[in-house]
Length: 209
Ligand code: TMP
Image (cartoon, rainbow, N blue to C red; front, side, top):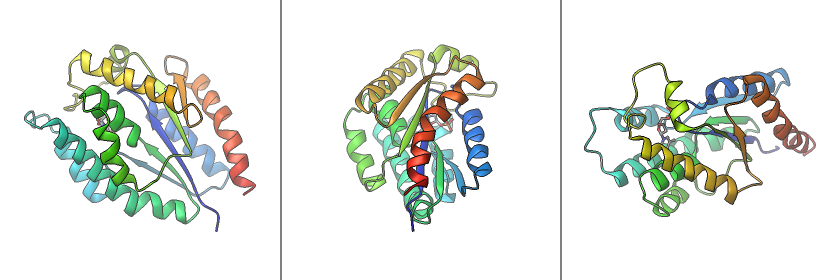
């Protein structure tokens, strides 16, 4: 059986990932491709519980390394229980955030550096997205787009979010084949067209497998 597709969406908080994710899912479904939509941290019962612990605004005492390990633990469960099995069944998986979020937020934002990559290599067991759409938006603008109470990470200082942004820029520069950086200040339709333009060649290659 042919292997599935693994697509991830990344970006600072408020960069408009959800809108584009649901549009891509609809497109895949219209092409009769069985598609799973999932998110991190979360996507499993265990992962959702870990998510609550990580994002709880009362957990101000959380150590940065603990935070990184919790994200990686949720990811490990997600990969083994949901993502890898779906890929093995030949389905498409669209994931709202994956390992790149940890590199940007914990590696750059928290300043944990390369430790984060090492921890996560254990968690993902060699799984790498086929394509990653990185919606880049000035963090100050992103914050303004969040119309609900901030979670523990969103509450962080502007300096933290600037470092996350820098981390994402470095990821885009380091992995130009996989990471497609898109200006998230563009219109929804423009962003969607850009996503489709990059996604179509992969889809064609995958369909001809
Ligand atoms: P979400 O609001 O996009 O669902 O993500 C929850 C928050 O967790 C968001 O502020 C980004 C952050 N995050 C990390 O810091 N590291 C990670 O590995 C992931 C997946 C998310």
